[in-house]
Image (cartoon, rainbow, N blue to C red):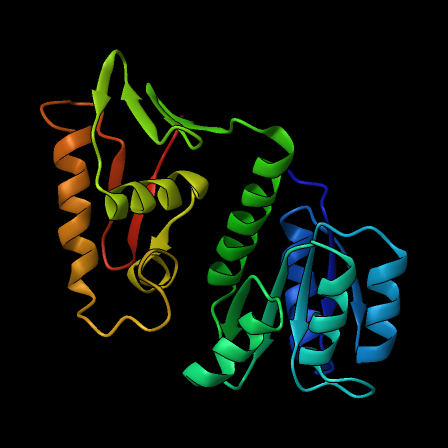
Length: 227
């Protein structure tokens, strides 16, 4: 279980209550604020591992909270809003957000994005970060991937795909979540590109092995399960 601190800024009581309950179930400590100005003061006066920030808030809107907070802190920020157009998403990222979740959202997707951002934030503290599963190791600084004693050569996109799966190991990630994190918001291609690249990566890391690393969860997506 994790013991990370989360600041949840949301003025819809139903959404705030639901997200808080799910986060606490996962082991997070959650503080909830509904006013933008008060949330900014809280974020600057206390220590948080991640901030979940709605856009439409009383007191001060989420974009302005994000801009002011980013000027003082490098805490990971996820914008959560019903405004899901590409310009709205770009605006949030330009104000300093690290990620953007559009309402309505699946709680599993939000949890995956939180895990990814917090793990990436830890890279800066731990230096030469290594991701692993079974006998596979990925060294981020050198972009080296090794399984047992065999070095695996991945393209840039293949590396990013495997990295995202490793960052969320033991958790299922959907095709849409992979598209968002690996290909980006403005990707206009077909979702089957994920299946194609999963096959590419499998052919390199799982070829001729009984202990396959990348597993298909039928009807949902993919996962790396590390037992």
